[in-house]
Length: 282
Image (cartoon, rainbow, N blue to C red; front, side):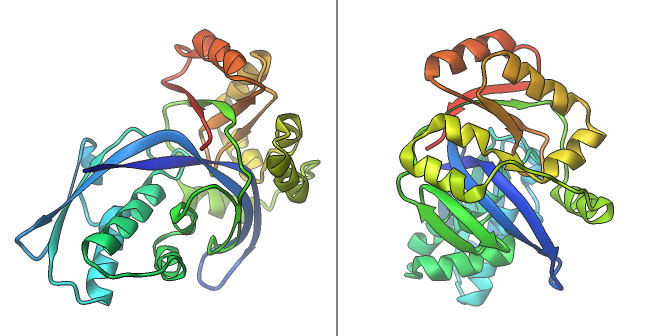
């Protein structure tokens, strides 16, 4: 059976201190979007993990889905084999958490398939060993995410926001973005407030959500890739309430007052960039 592995956007992202572990403390509001990969998992007779994909780049042991399966196998001495097939739709290294979502989807699926009976808190602990975005995908709803991505407070009253996503067709490594941030130490003045954003989500106040979008990485990635600013301007010109980089970029998303405005913007700019997607948060 195919399982949807949803991407995410960061409505807010503030980067804190780098820790001895190499991770950074973060403060973020994340929400899943309808754009997704599709993952199929089936048991095999051989005692090994096989990853296959529509994108051949993912068929190796560096894939987070492979890593999470191997982590479970070793930790719980699982003697079963499994084949994981990933139908890839979410662009790679795009700031949308595609690989992290795949890892979380595989983690939750293997927990059931192998009868491990791990609770959500245990799953989050294992997910944090794979990557800082992975724990968020264990569960639903928007969330306030802190620490190294392992402290997650769900925003229960989250609602659907109409979005146009634009990816310019190149990748940005999260590792590069963090090291550039540490090196440049940009002084970021933000009018956005994370508490106001959470309240706005709970009140379903789309204009207040728009005015509190923020991402510390935006300064870094727009400095290197000027097209990101152009994308942002294009979205605002086409009636987006606001637009922001997601994750470490280069994907930019604009949020709209209604599906009608989002759809109109999508039709106007869908051929301007390699990847333009009309979607909404879930």
